[in-house]
Length: 345
Image 1 (cartoon, one colour):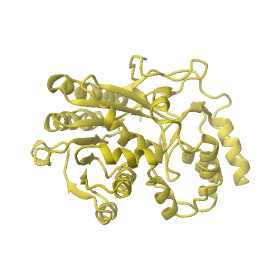
Image 2: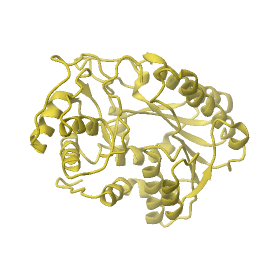
Image 3: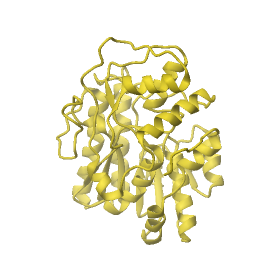
Image 4: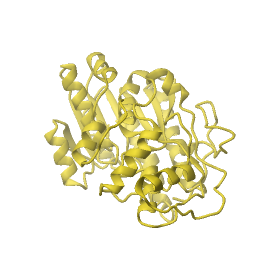
């Protein structure tokens, strides 16, 4: 993607997020069956649904995209309906509601709970383990791409480099443990029924309205110290996240594929903050004198070999984020808590 992108409105941002590449359009031409997105009402789901519909339109094929969520946000549901997505209100923790969902060939599972885990661990475990169990049982004949997180891996120093898919999980804290539980439940049903499955381990998605870069930039803009208790991070443009999730449907197999999803660069929190501060004309302060050594870092080399590199580089994302904040761009007010490395979200 060319350098010099200007995103000065929500409309332009959402259009770029839902822009399908040629590879995704070709996928829709050969992918058999309809698509269901479970948890479409979340931060990434709407973009994924809109991108899927645009790819289908450009492919010139007939395919239904179902969007399933509790839909607490009526405006988001209306946006999906307008785009041609068939929305279904459903609580994925209620067996009777899940059993009424239509059977489809392709399922993308995005539902989950992270923030607010501390003090409400039982709710997090139910959402991250019970809902996948009900889903996996009902859609045992489907191919499933299940969103997960790089937080299932052990923390790493920047010198060690990011975890590959071959690194054994070692989750820290109950949120991360429940995410590994989600993976194990999907794997259990895949082994039991031969369900085609791919575990999509993501960290972290960038959408300018939220994400690691937004967290750093907002602190600078508002005159707060930037949290540097975690010194390094990985991020990836959300438009690439959604495209690769859809493309991963072809990779799902009964042997359970695992795919790390992030950008190729390892970003420094302090260097990123200093660049943003300069771009925004703001002073930069940090919370601690020396940045933390342990980080959630992933190696997404397998994804790059399969799908190529992300369309927008980290340098470009940093610039876009700084311009978005300085230009009055909105935030959805959901911090990533990327600075947490003790598992307490």
